Each structure stands twice: as structure tokens, then as C-alpha cells.
Length: 226
Ligand code: CDP
Ligand code: CDP
Image (tube, rainbow, N blue to C red; front, top):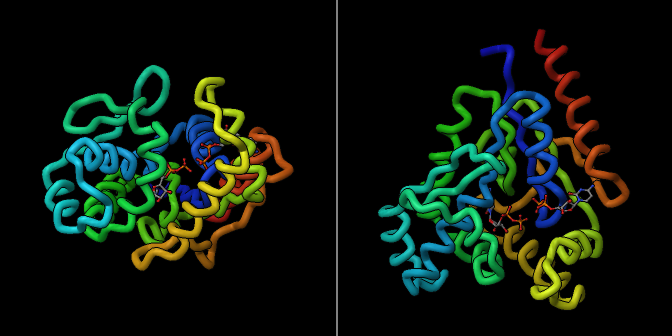
């Protein structure tokens, strides 16, 4: 289908990928796919089964037995783990602290990348993650690498926390920096900017400005394709 394209949105934690991707998808009439949610669902399953991220064989076995699906829901995307709605549970701090280590596992990545490629095969997808432009959808018509300073990203996360969940912002900053480091240094599909991606630093931009910038780029790409 030449009238639709795929948009790949990568970048470090808290850059605004999911917020922006959701809105861009809505404005284009495309489907939003949050690949981080899929890695989080596997991580939740591992925690529930008492499997540590470094137990590679157990993780391989576990992931083979899992069914992970993303479905549109009234409030956005719903994440299903073996049919169970785990949309809320995958956002806990426990999952956030383990997800990067689980995502480094080869079998976990192979299974999820396969699913992600199937989801994007009809085009008309906005997919966000870490390796979308470099590995999952190297042929995506538009690739954006969204970033922001680690201080700003930590501040954005801090503001999202409920009063009772608040932790010092310095701690969030350390945790984000550590997750970036581990995502950037893993062997398989590390977080790096694709050669043909447009880098967008959102440190001083509003969400609306980022969304508009990406929509502009997508219009240009569409016009070029015609
Ligand atoms: O939303 P947040 O930035 O906290 O993270 P996420 O997008 O939910 O992704 C959680 C973790 O999953 C990342 O830190 C990566 O370790 C992993 N991930 C990945 O390895 N590859 C992707 N395509 C997406 C996420
Ligand atoms: O998906 P990723 O981890 O990259 O970021 P996110 O979950 O979309 O979180 C970004 C947070 O920063 C959200 O609370 C947004 O409201 C806020 N924000 C943003 O995304 N973009 C801006 N330009 C400014 C703020």
C-alpha cells in the first residue's frame, strides 16, 4: 500500500516517545505499537515465575510459552499476557528496574521482534522502542530519534509519579542513566540512532511541538513518495 507508511520512533527512557507516538498515530489514522510494553510484559511474567534476568535458559523457556498481544482499548492500548490484561501491572517500579536486563536476552528479543514485524507488515504503523529504525523496521519510511537531557527526562518521570510513589529526583536520574547505559551497551540491537533517522531533541519542546514536527516530516515523506 503506497498510501501508508511506517514510522519508527526510537530514543532513551522518558524522551516522550510513547506520548508523542500515540498522538502522531491518532492524527495520521495509524495504529500505535508500544514495543516497550511487550518487553515489560515478558518481564512481569519472569518476576511472577521467580526467574532472574540472568537465567537465560529459563527465560528462553518462559518466553516460548507466553502469548503477548496488544489490543486497542477505550483508554489506549491494552496489553494482554496469556489473555490477561496487564496494562497497569507492567508499569510498576519492579518491572521498570528489571526490564532492561530481560530485554537483553536473545530469545526474548527474537520472539518480540518477530511479532512486531508482523504487526507492521500492512504499514500504517507508528512504532516506538529502542531498535525499531535500526533493526525491527529498517525500511520504515520515516525514522525519528527522540531524545532529551537526562535531567529533563528524570523530571518528566518525577512529575508523573503519584504523591505516595515519589522517590528523590536524583534517584530517578541515576536509574534512567543506568537503563540508558544498559540499553546502549547490550550486544543484540542496542539503542543507537539509525543512520537515516532524524534526531529531535525535545528538551525545550512541548509535546504539541514534537507532534507537529513529526507530522510535518511525515507529510514531506508522503509528498516525496507520490
Ligand atoms: O517508557 P520507558 O522509556 O520507561 O521504557 P519502555 O519504552 O517501556 O521500554 C522499557 C525497556 O524495554 C527499555 O529500557 C529497553 O530495555 C526495552 N526495550 C527494548 O529493548 N527494545 C525496544 N524496542 C523497546 C523496549
Ligand atoms: O516513552 P518515553 O519513555 O520516551 O516517554 P513517555 O512515557 O512518553 O514520557 C514522557 C513524559 O514527558 C510524559 O509525561 C509527557 O507528558 C512528558 N513530555 C513529553 O513527552 N514531551 C515533551 N516535549 C514534554 C513533556
